[in-house]
Length: 164
Image (cartoon, rainbow, N blue to C red; front, side, top):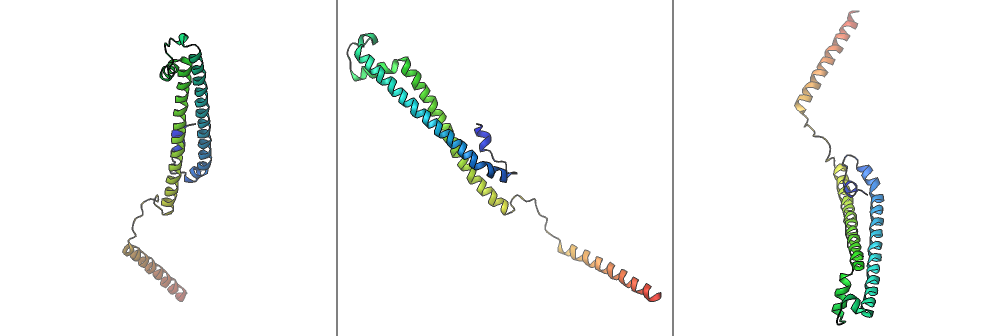
């Protein structure tokens, strides 16, 4: 998935952008749901590791070099265990990916709004090239000259017919 490319708008192809918008939104929405599932599973895995370590620490405190079992001592020892740190690191990475996926989905919503506004502007000829104001005086003079030339040709033709 290329977040930056997918949220970019090609203003010269608004119709293509609109055609892609729904499928992109679904694609990124699905990705966000998958990332949420991964975060939830990692959190559950972390809770299981934490519970398992809690049980082990309480059953063999001497193995973990704990003199007196207190809630604070058990929690501090859990935090120091490699298993816990590894799963916690994976959870942090998964949360990061979820945030990126959520940001991409929000960006696609912004893209939708931008596309709507660009289509409105396009309908109002905002993107049309500059128009040069008409010089009515000049146009009138040209039409009058053309009419006078046509009248002269017509009179000339009438004279030729009469002379024949």
